[in-house]
Image (cartoon, rainbow, N blue to C red; front, top):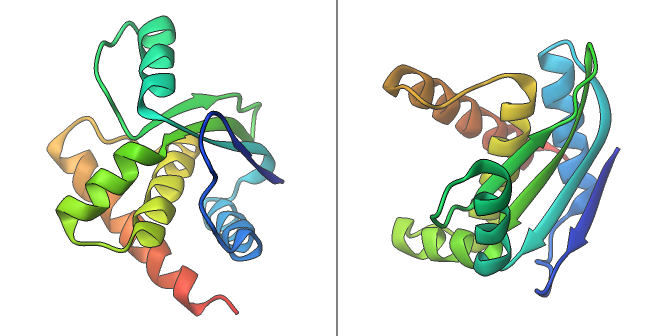
Length: 140
C-alpha cells in the first residue's frame, strides 16, 4: 500500500491510483510483495536536514529513500524534495508531473534493490525508470 504525505509544502496533483498500480506492477515484475510505502513530499531545507542527520551528507538532493524491507516484502519511506524535482524538470525540459513520477519510481527501484552508484548501475536505473514511465502511460 502506498500512502502520500506532505511536509511544509503543497503536495503535487498526481493520479495516485495509477501510481499505486504502477508500483504494484514493479513489485510484481521483481517478484516482490508490496508492503507499506510512504511518499513524503517536502521542501529542499527539510530534506537537507534529513540528509545531514541520517546520512551525514551536506547537500541538496531530490530523494532520500529509507528501506524497511523484511524478507520479500518491500517497505520504505521516500522523502522527495518537490523544489529539487521541479528545478530538475525545468533544467531537463520535462513536465513536472513526469519528473515527479520518475523520482517516485527511482526511489521504489532503490527499495527493490536497484542501485545507481556506478556508471553501469546508473544506466540500468535509467533503463528501468524509462520502462516504467512508459508502462505508466499504458495504465488506464
